[in-house]
Amino acid sequence: MTYAVKLAPAMLALMGGAAFADPLPYTHGERSFEGYVATPEGTPRGTVLLVHDWDGLTDHERAQADALAADGYLAVALDLFGTDAVLDGFDDYRRETGALYGDRTEFRARMQAGADAAAGLEGAGDMVIAGYCFGGAAALEAARAGLDMAGFVSFHGGLGTPEGQDYSATPAPVMVLHGSADPVSGMADLAALMDELQTAGVAHEARIFGGARHSFTVPGSNDWDPDANAGAQAAFREFLAARF
Image 1 (cartoon, rainbow, N blue to C red):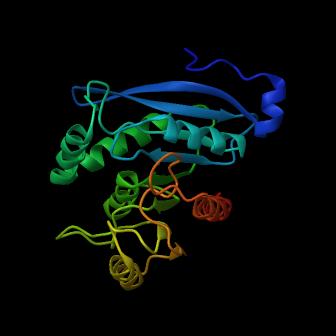
Image 2 (cartoon, helix red, strand yellow):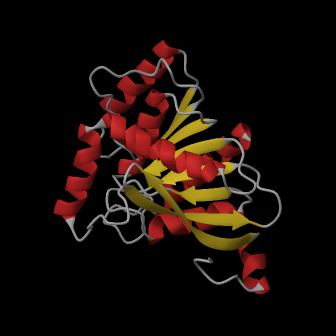
Image 3 (cartoon, helix red, strand yellow):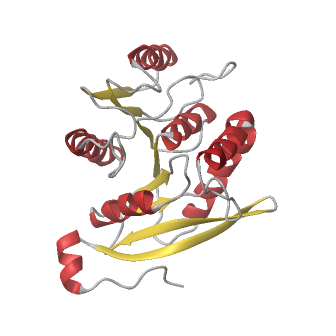
């Protein structure tokens, strides 16, 4: 079942090849989830998993997936909260993210369930997982969990490593795209993460955007920074080109 109408040829030309957008229903345990798939024209260059911010899978992630499909990637925005999650405001967002931060085994299992669902898509191949804010923290959680990925990317995510965790099982490079004025995870947190990755022997890179605050990639947010966003997206595309 098509999630959105097939794009007109003129729009396809402008977007550079995005063809279809479809839902991706899947289950984990007794819970149902629904991701979003943006498929390019032709053979995908690679598969990119996107993890949403703390407010769940929204138009922000769908737009990011569409842009990746326009660049030739099979893009899958995952749903970590489930179709029955109530997401009406900050208290709801804190409840859902807090539940996963408090149960890291479940956190990892939901990402694996989404990755397994994506792996069954036509044209799916090696995967990179990336995310925004909460999703950035999720990408780093996936790295520490040793999920079978070709790379891990955090956009303005939480950078702290929970007690008892490390990057010894991380199988692929890590990229961090972060603002120097981020009040959630500051430069000391970033330096600590770089030290951890270096100690673990994990290939890593960070791009720092001076003056950018939290959520700098989200249009309409108080922290929206178009210049930082453009730089981060360019760096992300460079990372993807090197992984696939």
